[in-house]
Image (cartoon, rainbow, N blue to C red; front, side, top):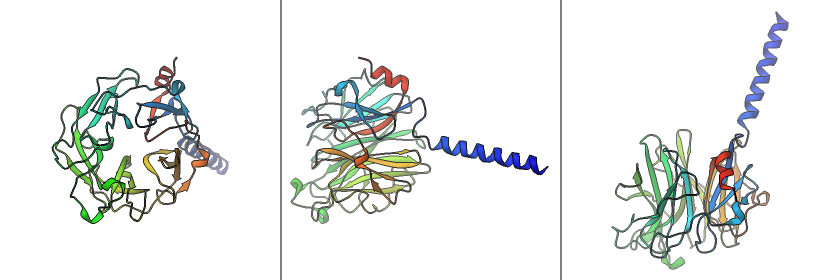
Length: 316
């Protein structure tokens, strides 16, 4: 009887170990990581791939997969891509330094894209100066997409106004949509008490994690922080302490890989990308030196595709 009990115990431990090891796999066998990004001042959407989250290689010799046509200035900066609830890929991006709308397009395979659309999310606001770095997050509770971005509205929040950085003083705003055809009225998403841009919201169990940039210029912050909320539209908590170092960082995109969080970002004053890692969202380690990124890569988004989708993308 004791021998059988010992056998059962050993078998149970073996199964537990196998499950734990499997749960810590970086990616499923059929998954590949993609990173959408731009180069220069906004030339178009590029793609890089990785099978481990550390070594990133530009797809198709760093070609432009989609060139911008939306908006007056026709830029494509900060391309944000998610796989929607409908199985399609949805992308939004910054079309201009000072226009009052964002770009949008959709695709089933990341190769053939719909006609690009300009969404005038801030056209109703006469004092809006810009709409920067839009992103999309899906809300399973409401079955809606949240599109959010940073805008400076002249005259608002004078307590954090600075003459530096061309007088920009951003807060995060949003609209919701179910079909990317009709949109809710624009609302304030996050007012952290400082100039904030580049929010990236990632679901984590029963809460949402917002990675964001503290854009304060006087005294200079220019670092990444975290806020949390139970609901996608908030209210979000007070932003936590910086998770990045003394360098200037922006454009965070985060994901959980192998039980640990990795947040990639743009070290824009140094002309290169960086990354930090954490197991608990509180203690962060800079792992930039462990990363390999394509030269000239700028602010974008990490997302997963199937190996079949990747192989189709990688065909000459």
